[in-house]
Image (cartoon, rainbow, N blue to C red; front, side):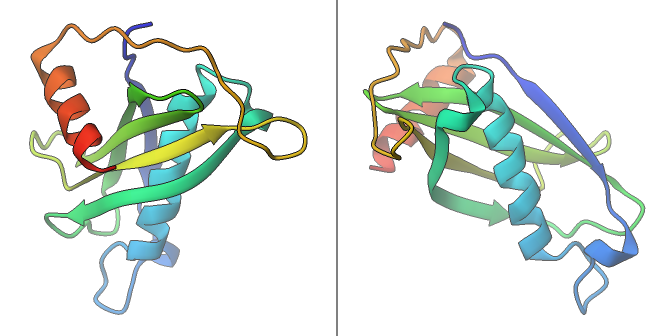
Length: 139
């Protein structure tokens, strides 16, 4: 399978803000994991996916109320039982990401034990190969 980009957009509202009047990091993390889960669930049954680690959730600038938080996610690495998803957030039409990082999910059986998923990733773009290399260094 080749990496496929998934989009998940959120309107930043007053209840999403911190004491500085910008997007609360906890809300960002919640949306970040949801965006990553959407990519993982495109390849595996949702009931079999658990999040095991968030790697380096990095913010580069604040997000203001009324802005549209546009998340993009894609599977960038597969292991025997795991998937690593790259997620980035761009605000509306901004080119540079406002937030980015990686999430590792594991495929589990009905008892919660990890099980092989059988997925093989084929990387062709320069960006995907670079992100895959970064994901390898996270281990």
